[in-house]
Amino acid sequence: MKKSLFILLLAACGLHLQAQDQLIQVARGYLQNGNYEKAAATFKQLVEYNPKDVELQADYARSLLGLKDYKNALLNIESAISINPQNSEYQETRKQIISLMN
Image (cartoon, rainbow, N blue to C red; front, side, top):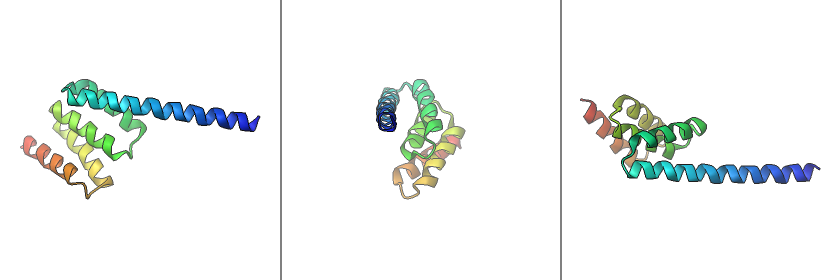
């Protein structure tokens, strides 16, 4: 019984991760195609579920940048930078946002 339950839980986790990966790809497609509203809405959900995922934080910031929501874009890129301060791409995105805010 315990073994069957464990196998079911593993299968459910695998399906969940696969669905999440597909959702990330969809959101990135929205971002690449300039559909910033759909990208931002999707990345927002993904970030709420995975707040420590630095790539999701950065992608969310980029989608907000596309919407000209500079304040929230800055908050999210700074969150990504706090997780990975050595990433020069995040630093450049931050500079871009700040320059657009002025």
